[in-house]
Image (cartoon, rainbow, N blue to C red; front, side, top):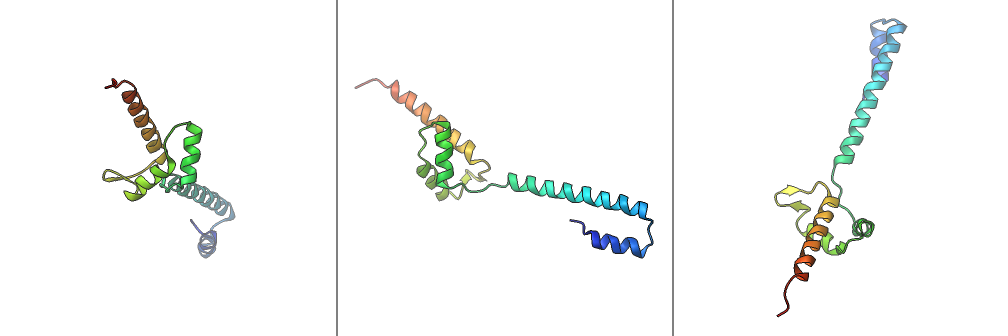
Length: 114
């Protein structure tokens, strides 16, 4: 963030006209807004480990049969890694588990009785 006080001291030191000061202040405000937006975007992109309650809520919303505690424990034991990569989106991982469970159920349904 650009500090207006520092810029103000510099403008006073160099006796810059008031009309140019306003332009400088407007530029500073725009730069500060953009930096804040960029910081907010970085915060949104950063992975946050979900709680079991968040996982359960998402599973209920999707109406799937994924066990939230099992999901949490599995990835907690692996340090929230998928292979060698850090997890980026736990909701995508839940959807993957959901698809795997659906496939397993379908394959179990088609097994012949012995």
